[in-house]
Figure 1 (cartoon, rainbow over the protein chains, first blue to last red):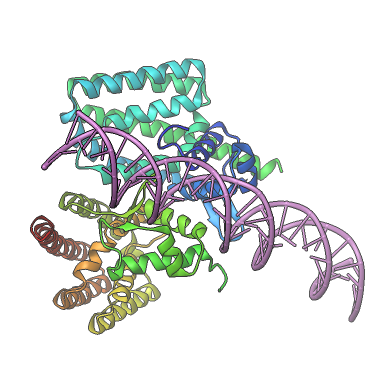
Figure 2: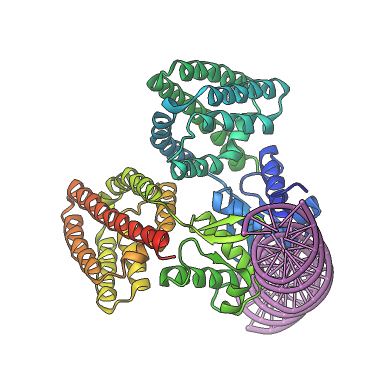
Length: 223
Length: 223
DNA sequence: CGTATGAATATCTTCGACAATTGACAACCA
DNA sequence: TGGTTGTCAATTGTCGAAGATATTCATACG
């Protein structure tokens, strides 16, 4: 175990990847012992990991009943995306003018990793790289709290993002959009970039609306 | 222990009141065993409580080093208050038109409780009532995620709010401001109310700036 | 005199076991 | 038959102790 690596962080990682991989689906119950078995840890760090994911909004907790993967309604997704639309432009306007060559290089690297993962169908890697890409354009000194809020909004919808990243077409579209964004960032075209991101989000939301509607139909009829 | 009351919730409550009471001051280390002794619990639930407060931003965590009460710089407070200035008007615009008589009655009750606590110098009660008052004007269906973010911003600065609520003058000023806000809310004067709250926040920020500067001077000289 | 070394201590981290609670199911009664 | 009650298995919640890590302080060295 590397430095800073703790049993807790392992448990968190395990849970995240289980959610992203779809092993833990929205609405499903998460049983502590199962996670403990799966990770090879005892329940103590697992409980703390569950608590972390709960605070991030990915899990819901009912005392003495346990944890459940958060199931979002379409209205929730719309609210979350609207909040992102409010906050992310603020972050980008502050951060983009301050990016230096190194920062841009990191962002480009993230975009490349994203493209690579998209081709391989490595959903969880693509999600991580995608996140680095977007946050790379928003990170600036003096807005750590703003980024904390934005990160929380991203966390809340991680399971759903994983859902639509399973469509190859969407992965390709995301890669193309990233290219354009990177270009705008390098040109310093802030407002243009913000526009693109808004469109990016809208597209994602549209897709999610469809997926959730389909899911609801299945729940309503099929069972 | 009542239903839903768990050792964790006791530990959380203990920590909150210790922070609000000033027993745990910004920058100070929080030792798990001490909390366990203080609450009469074992460390397991205490650790989970610490994790909760960490996610709220009230504590900071360094693996294998422990927890520290978050120490905010003036810049942090300014950022947090700016974020509140961005988000709270959104919540109020959506919520205020939907408030019914019952809601207003609850808000009025919170204001009264606030005034009462202000006279008695019951800082922790006043903080709780103050929170109910303000959130009562923002709570509306369909914006639970927005409120979650706002709550997080409030949590992050709870220790500092406790700091300036120890000044009787400020407590009085807050009570008066609440009266005016309540009046505006009852008249449905949304924009007016938003203005008042902005001023309310500005005043708090101004005060905090002074307090922190004084604190820094003490740390620089006195020791 | 300042710095590096190394025990000793304090603290965090994890574990395994036990107690408490919940939900499901079957037995029972009207 | 319909509803209630009691029992049981599964799960969560808590504890106390042992193991791992960081910090401190005394000591020796350059």
